[in-house]
Structure formats: C-alpha cells, structure tokens
Length: 272
Image 1 (spheres, helix red, strand yellow):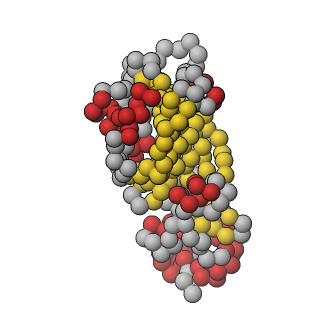
Image 2 (cartoon, helix red, strand yellow):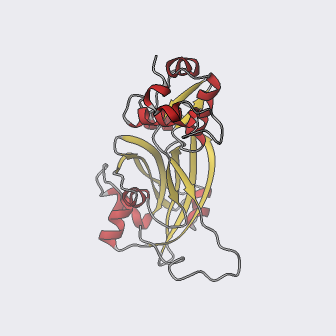
Image 3 (cartoon, one colour):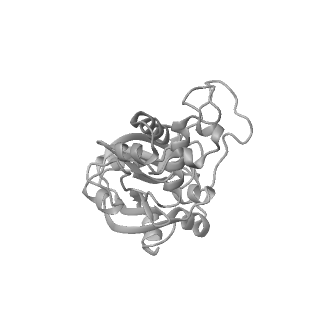
C-alpha cells in the first residue's frame, strides 16, 4: 500500500484535515499527488482514474478524503471531470479571452501552444436565410462553406464550421487543406483585418461528425461559440459555428460599465 504519510515529513504527516494542522490538509496533499500522476502520464488524459475505493485503499485514507481531493482537482485545478461514478483525467483548461478579437491559432500561439488545422469539407453553395442574415447578404447569394478540425499538438479540441462570402471563396479554396490558420494567410497575404465580431456561447452535445473528429463519445458536452465577424472595411467576413471540447478551453469576457471611457489600448483593433 502506498500511503501519503510515507512521502511527507513526520510533522506534516501527523496533521489532520483541519485549519490549524501543520502543512496542507491531507486531501490537498492527495490532490497534489494525483495531479503529479496526471502530469507525468501515469494517469493518461481521457482515461478513467482508479475508483475512489481503490484510491482510498492505495493511499491509506478515508474515501471522503479521496472525494475532497478529486473535487478540488475538478473545480479548482480543472484537471478532472466526472462521468457517472468514474473520474477522468484531462489536460488543464486553457482560458481564452473573447475581449480580444483574434483567431484560434493566434490565441494558441500566444499561450505557448502549437495549433494545427485540417479541412475535412469544402463546398460552394447558396446562402440560407440564417447565413444571409448573419452575413448581411441576400438569400441564395453564393457562399463557401468549410469544416475544419483544430488541434493543440496532437489533441483535437475544436470543430469549426464556417460560411464565407463569395469575395473570400477563391482565396480560401487555394489554401492547403492542412494550413495552420486561414486567418493568418488572409491577413498576411491579402491585408484583410477583422474589426468587429459578435460571439454567442452555449452548451451543446456532440453530433456524429463532432464525435468522430474530436474522438469523443456521441452526446459528449461541447462549448459552442457562434461568431459573426466583419472586416475593417465593413464587409462581412465569416459566420462560424465553433464547437470546443468542454474540458479543453474556458472563455473570459471583460466588461466595462456603460458610459465609462476605456483606457487607451482597451478597445483597439486587434490583429488576428
């Protein structure tokens, strides 16, 4: 049996889970040990941990202590999620600010991550009523639709469904299917800047395509971000439906009170 006390100084090991105990509470020391096992791969991402009973037996603690540790790893450190009676390890949730207008690739690079992309569907068509309304087009105007899977390293984290107006269609059709970022190319080669976007966020369940591309069970929880964006010259740029693995990303928005003046730099045009 592996015990927490065998790894700790005697003074800390003798402490109870109470505020005046020497050293961190026992459940927090257990949380630290489980986090270390996730980090070094002993508990692989997207796989179930041993049962609470098995962990309590291994570490020589009460099951309630194990539950406290697991709940901390879920709510505070965002390294676990519970599905039924089992706990599953996942990578740390990455915060993504919607207060800055930038692409998935730009956000990932700024966070020190390696974004990749792959186009799985590309077709021309006619704008639906919804697409026309969102893009400021007429119904049945020509559009280009694409579906891409975005990944961080080897891990797929988002399926992106995007509708582009006709003025962008030829540009995007020329790009390689594995281009890292469409936005990056459109900016660098064609000088197109985004100046405005609206985001709507809600929880959805993975459909068949999402499940296959993200390697998740069907109906797994996803975060859906609907985005309508316009270029600096006012032209419609894209209408997109982005579906993120719920455990991979969290979104933050910074608001200011109505009537207050923003400081310089708070509301400037951001590059993609």
